[in-house]
Length: 231
Image 1 (cartoon, rainbow, N blue to C red):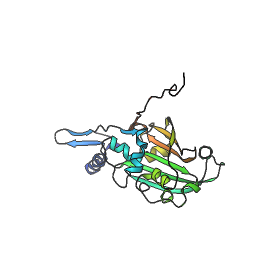
Image 2: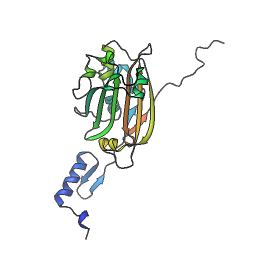
Image 3: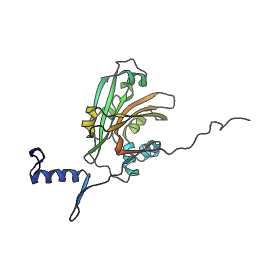
Image 4: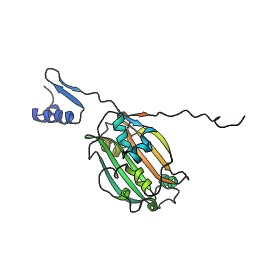
């Protein structure tokens, strides 16, 4: 007989299976019982997710482009957010070319696929770039059609180029709880700096992605530094 701490009522076990099935983690069938469902990781597009034709012309938000490429649907309510004015940390201040401690807007999002969190993303902005725009509206969901990049474009700041830096590390206890990670799971931390054509930084973002829930995909033209050189 199993020890008492392993015993549970049939209704409790049934409820646990139902919860796992609702999140798409297991599947049940007559004669086969309940088995773990293999869920392919989401494609996290690299360059293609920022295509202007998506957010400028087709009103598509960047992370929704990932869902489309993965053959998965985005449901309303799968992104929540908070917006606050905060003191810039050393990293944020350096990225936005501000003194440490200067006030910036922080737009923090938690993104889910169904009930499962996939990543967090916090964008930091200079107040003079976004004051009065939808980027400082704390309403849930994306910042309107086209998301934040479209808002910046409408405010007169057209995105020209970006730099992304990735690093893998163990999740903190707070991140593990927020992303519902098992003990010891890792995350991929993303730092994204977004520039206009004249080099103005209009967004610095920090993302924390559950490492096993994404496959990072990059498709780009291979540069040739000899192009344009005279003989």
